Image (cartoon, rainbow, N blue to C red):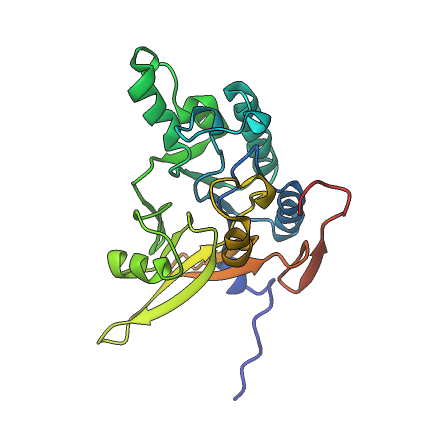
Length: 266
């Protein structure tokens, strides 16, 4: 007997928890059109869980790299923009929100540790972004957390085309990472037939602000996008779906979303 397909409103389908994965954004050096497009799709998707996968903030002001004065935001200005983006995500009213810190958030710790140790106890990422007040869970850089059986961490200290496989080799479990700015999805099994998924969902940064590498390399290797997922609570399995942004359009659950051309971005 042929089974009828599950609809979104059926009893089984309604048990799935809906997840929005927000990749590297590098605010205030983010692509505003791409961000607005993701938010438009997210409002239609209505996630139960929001995960910022790290590098939501750029922390350019406290970077140890040589800085272009024309784009040197002050720290308070950077923090204000990131808080505006977190306000956007809070407006989705997810029941659980997770802030995974990335290497760019870790710039603040390193700066204070090396150049202003007197201020080290007074400034930190959770306080600057009011994460406790917002009700967000905070995962420090180089740490990880879980959603069901899925692991979440920003990076494992590597990058490049094959990083998604290196991460799978490290965790030996399904895992979502960020950091590489690539859209990547890999499934690998073991001798017993059990499979694990590794995924990276691109980035939401403005490539025109990249001055630490040749822009042709960034344009070739990096991809605008984000991710969605579905957690089945009984099994703990999370079904992952990359959402590429193609000429400032994307498709989520069969709906086409388009970004207005009036916003800044490439």
